[in-house]
Length: 539
Image (cartoon, rainbow, N blue to C red):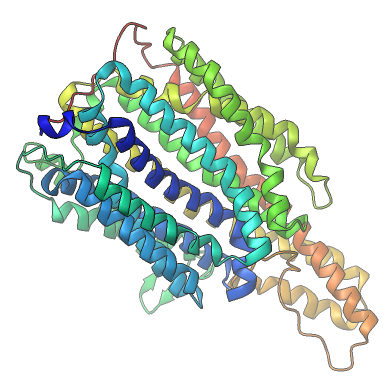
């Protein structure tokens, strides 16, 4: 393997892997901005859209550590290429989807492909770059993440506005094909040569447990948090999921000497354990605040996808501009302080947004919050990883990286489920309340059907498309055109005011978790500036 390393251009390898990673990150943000357009086209309810997001994140999170082990066995290049191929094929199928079920399954395929390719970068980087240069390499990936956040909403909005939402998936096909060609030509076949065994029981328990819990959270509102069919109920499904996860943890404890999926030893490092919680909180918050906000821009304010993307853009732009100075301060030993302040700024900025949103707000009224939270995000990712990994034992570095990525994705998965559940529950309540208030503006014969139509919205599946008026309201035969227009206008007002009322508590849940994460940061130990990362080259 040493000969292969000597003949390889490490920066070319880094470029190929970075392009693959960038593709998966970009796909996430592009999809978010397209949600209302997808709803309008295939008439998917809000819980179906949540499953479209979760299908990707759940498969990705559950399989990250497993695919890292597969990379140890078969080689990082082989797994990276397989992941890119699967992601590309699944992207094409996502674009061809005709209903919510097909889209969910295709997105799961994308998540599978992303899970195969993502963990393969660590052995490549640790094999090809000396320890004193890896900090700059990881900083490149941080900048790529910021760039993906910048381009995702804007590029996605441009594509959706001009060619339709299906092309946000189709554009992945030629890029994926290019990455496969570059992989074959530029990436060496690095194989650590150590025997490994896969924990299939652990994978099964974790997958089943997470699926049960998240299914219960997403579908709970549809079934009034009660019976699904026969003796099967939402509380039972969630309870079974929690039990399976508990069994998984016990099973992992018994396998600690036989290559477990989760080596508990990494949590003995205090900084790693604390930063794992902070990372989970940020993974939760990114979805928790941006999911309601993306819907708000298009479904409440009525912006098209491109305008919504441009409105969001100041936040990641500020993040990217501030990342350089922040990285310099981290090198001087201020990581802990920067992370604490960054988390608080993120909470403050997003808190301003939650306070400012209204059904008839100017979209630029949110700009101060976007700038402040963008500045906060610049002070989160790099110091978080610096604190979390710098003092780890070398032999645990690879496993720790997989666990970090998994925890972050699990935070995002849980956020999609929890925030989605809060949003649906609050929206169902707010729709009825607002409908009762606004119904006084209608003639007496249509008031009761008007309120009943919104009351039934949650059970029918809430749709939140562009300019959504709330729920289809059957009009009595003979309704005049003027009355029909009045009902439509009032219905739109009901939906927009109800959604704003619902998004505030949903965002508050995520921000409260990040605030706790900021307090947790105070318990971390600040490594000395001279300490180098402990990652070792794969041997």
